[in-house]
Every structure is written in structure tokens, then in C-alpha cells.
Amino acid sequence: MRGPGRIGLTRMDLFAGLPERDLTLLDSRLPLVRWPRGAAMPEPLGRSDHLFVVRDGRLAMFESTAPGHEIMISLLDAGAIYSTLGDAPAASVTALEDSAVSPLSGRAVEGLIARYPRLGRNLAELLSDRVAMLRETVALVSEMRVEDRLRARLYQLAERFGVATRDGIELRLELTHAQWASLVGASREAVTTAFSKLRASGAVEMDGRSITIPWEVVRAREEALSLAAAAD
Image 1 (cartoon, rainbow, N blue to C red):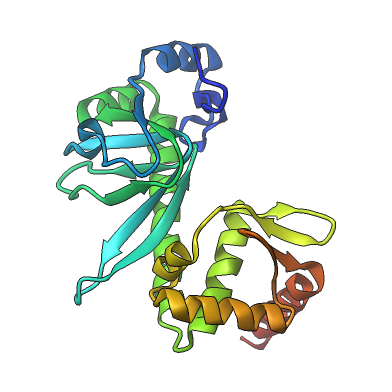
Image 2 (image 1 turned 180 degrees about the vertical axis):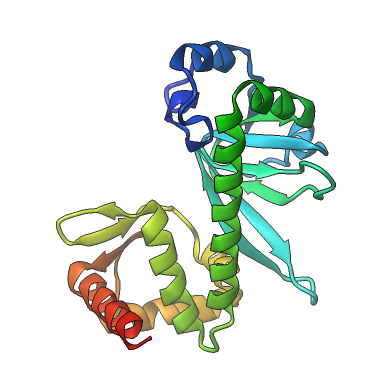
């Protein structure tokens, strides 16, 4: 039985196009590992040659820089995946909320793809999307000013997690300033200052940890992107 927040396989891009009846059966057989917020990664979720499917909650994926600083490179909501398939090392992942993850061994993934070739294409598309997002993230964190990096990150996350409201696009990520600092590769103090500048300029509105990008700001950015594309 699924928990109240647990997402079913039929709603996941990874399993799009597969028979619903088969997915219901698979859903009942997949292991489910609970991961409390802030707890160490459960051992089954870091095993080699596995695909991990986020079923509930939110995870953060990190990468260490040469000086040893950690940058949060990705947020993983229900339906997202991460992988140690092949020789890929285990990712540095943290549970930002109480979460649940289903691990699939490489052999299980091979068997599913053999039976459902569409699953192989879905997996390739998801991994391609992840690569594209990481390329974009590299470009974002290369911006010189913390304010510019933070603004770019806000737009990136709004496209993936934003909710349209009357006042603009709202981000309800519940991240602390320290976590935002990890997202943009800066100090907590620098990010706090950058948020203050964005609020003062009207680029964002904040209510606690909820952040809204006003519609006029969204439209101005879209027009700028359209002009830049036309110039190219």
C-alpha cells in the first residue's frame, strides 16, 4: 500500500508508456527504503550498480570542488532518479525531507528493459535531461557575482519546481540560506546579502522561506531571452 505522499510508478516519466497493470504489480514488488530528513544515507541507497528511484520527499545531490567545498548540484523530487549503474561512484546525497527511495539493481534494470524497451529510452531521456541540467548549472555557478548566480539559480529552479500563483511563480523549497549558499557556491553571508539586493530591486518577493518571482520580472526575462535568441 502506498503512503499518503508516495508517488506511484504510473505517474513517473521513467515508466511512461508501460502497461498500467504491469506497473501496479511492479509497484507492489519494488523495495522501499525510508530515509528520514537529515539522517545518514541508508546503506541500500549507496550500493554500486543500482538505479535509485525517488518515491517520496526531496533529496539534494552534492559535488565537491577541488578545495573541498560542496556545491548542491541538483534537487531530486518524487519521480527523479540517481544512479550508480556501471562504474559510477555513489553520489553524495542528503535527504532534505523525510523521503523514500526504491533501489533497482543493474540486473533488474536489464530485465525490465529487455521486457519493456520503452523503459530504456525513458531512462536515456532522463539521464540526458540530467546532463543538460548539469551543464546549465556549471554555467550558472561560473557567474562572477553571487547576486547573478542566485538569480540564475532561482530561474532554473522555478522552471522545474515553480508553482504559478496570482502574483508570480512561487518556489516552496523550504531551503535555508546555508542550503541556498551550497546551491550557488558561495558563503551564507554572501547569499543573505544577495537575497537582500534581489528583494530591494523587486526581482523577488519573500515570505519566510517561500520565494516568488513576480510576473513582470518573469515576462521581462522572457522578452530578453527572445531578443537574445533573435540576435543569434
